[in-house]
Structure formats: C-alpha cells, structure tokens
Image (cartoon, rainbow, N blue to C red):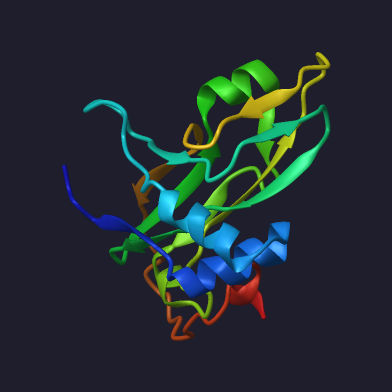
Length: 169
C-alpha cells in the first residue's frame, strides 16, 4: 500500500471560528469539542474507507440537514484525491446523503485560507419516516483516497486560495 496522505486537526482558532459560525455557543464549548476530535481511521486492514467520527451528537428527522465542521484536514500527495461519502450503513438504513453527493478534497485544499477544514453536510432523505441519530464519536462519513491522472496538454498554473467553489472563480 502506498502511504500518500495524513490526517490532522485544523488549528483550534480555525475550528473555533467555524464551529461558532455553524452552531453558536461559547469559545469554551468549541474548545471542548475540539479537544475530543478523533482523527479518521480505517476499521480493518481490508477497509478502503477512513471513518470520520462525529464531533457532536445529533438527530435528523426526515428531510432535515446538518452541516458538520469536522475539525479535520488532510495533507494529500499530488496526484491523489480524497472522496467523502456517507457511511454505508447510514446510507442504506436512512438514505443519509451528502448534499454534494460526494465530497472532493483536492491535495491543494490543505493550503487554503481555512486550513483545508473539511465540512460534511448531510441530509436524512429517508422515505420511511425514520429519524437518523448519530452519537458523538461515532462514524458518520468515510473518506477514500484515489489516484487520478491529467490530460497530456494540461497547462494549469493557478493556485487555490479558498474552499467551496474557489477553483472556478
């Protein structure tokens, strides 16, 4: 197996800013959440996906949405991408979906103004009237690294500086 990436926490200041912007609360509350963040891990040697663990307990009724600042960033070697998906079981049982269907984390996102902070926005799209409950510390999303190529005449020289939608501005 190639070792092509590493997970890290974003800085406390970045997390605190993003957490309070998303959920409100105090700096002390955000700091406690930050201190409890677990880095993504694979469950078994055969697992392709790295489980992202929820930094909070939440419940989503049918058609409700939540945006979760994970506190995680990923250093990724050039030529690789991290794709974020729902945990398979949650998707199967609740039709939990990422609002952007698949999160794409490019290697240069690590260097963005927001430190490459990975957010996961989820919707409980159940058609069975089920409430989705996720406890703090439980896996709710998974990330898979994939190698990619570029076309022979690619001449891109632009450098990213931003998050969502920044590469098309």
